[in-house]
Length: 427
Picture 1 (cartoon, rainbow, N blue to C red):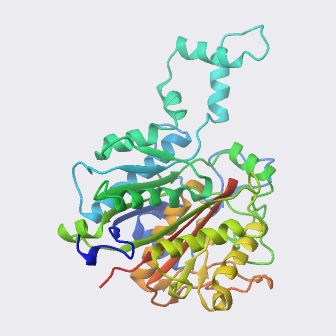
Picture 2: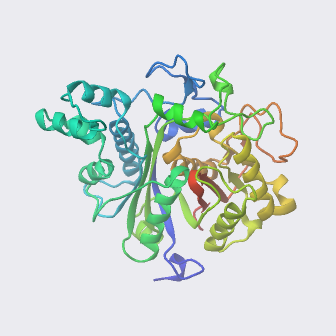
Picture 3: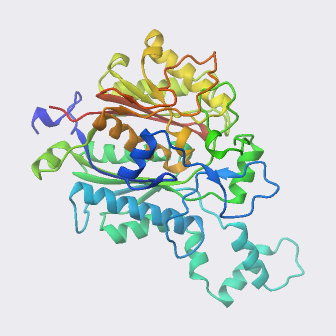
């Protein structure tokens, strides 16, 4: 392989040749980027289910995609299908994809409404704790394909594999808020190892439900500033009080640079480096000293073969939770030192909320779009800066600035940390 197509470690350079995205801002890269760079918020009052009595009544739900059944699996699949169609069209690929599929998808369990419906059908039992056997008996008596599909963790990837003709066993992963970035990393590694010339990396999450809101509220993780909804997500401010839960999906078509050039594909960006570290501190909280996050950023930079001076923009994890924003700032400070205040650092989550499993991939797409357009998206709702967090957050309005290397951070619950370094197409 020519040196023009290999990186500093002699591995194939990995190019992005197609992208697709859906968030609460809309469907498709064009509409999403126009809204995001324009400082528009997609956060709104929840209408999908009753919210009376809930402390959080807002979200970035995606309610405009037509689905055949109202459950998280069907919603997540529909968004993944649509973003993949967009990414493949942009990549100029048709027919069987003929490469592996790496999917980030939310954890699966029946929603309350489905459980109650099944319980109503289940035969009575005198035995305590016999609900599981009663449910099985009800399913044997009358099959429910929609419910069955909704409780199969691997069903989304299998359907995508069938629809788009991917090769080999599709991989479904769930590494909390780092999932989207992890799926991209698996695709990068498959190409670098010579196992394939192309990989389909997809991340999707349509799991917002009353139960999800209650669980995150019990962790004191969600914003309760319900009115107005679009002002609730305010990363790096003094009055931030939690993240806004949201939905979305993104697909990236990855190819070796050599294969992409050989078929005449347009290269939108390069996946230059990936870093991943685990955190043993707590089941949900990140280590307050930022140690694992620091190691993750440094690992991504080392994998990319660049040092901290090479990064021109940071797409922050930026959840708007008091603890996580502080930890991320401390982590970036440890890596970038005195240079950090001069590096633009913005949070897409101020506008689209936290798309959970999909976040790392959605933000990777926006990071590449930042380089392509020479436009830095803003961090909106930045009215009351936290004096303990000294950052250039591109406050409230977009900025024209050309950058050629972006760091995107994804620091998830349970100590799942991943960072990506993306660069512009090489000359």
